[in-house]
Length: 253
Image: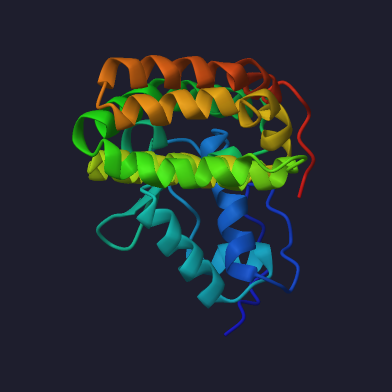
């Protein structure tokens, strides 16, 4: 059922939605306004009929978008059906990170990219340490197989990026830690939203075969401290360039 009431929702400045991927488009517009602060924490969203009139979409699209917002804890439906914006910095989880990476707000993009890079830099040494102490040779076997793929002469960055993800997936699996696994998944998905730019920024890291070998060797020997040191040195090769990505203008999709 299409909403035909043509009242304008004051203050939102929402854009008409093209007739494709309606739920996704509604969701993206509302996420952008919530995380930028244009829809402030505690603010009540307009009724469903006004949102679908303003956006030119069906109630189904609005309801599905609202359901996704609620799942990410960006909004909460209160008694009586009123929907209010939540403070995502206090209610959101890691599952919000990939969505934040896609935002066009310059200051938020810089903050999110910096946070993701810092989290990755902090997490990688601990992943390597835990894998060395808990799985040792079993994980090292998987790592050596990945490194063999990376040793092909002239391997393009895209292939090295995929192999690097497989390398770190094996490390994460070796930790046996569910929280580490879920955190890795989130960071992977967030950075893959900028796949080509991230690969270019990580070029020195992706081509650091000696670094991958050092991590694998320390894990095989069960030396947690050495594994952490090797991972820290390896990850450092990409940190500066990844951080620079946050300062470059983002093209609107």
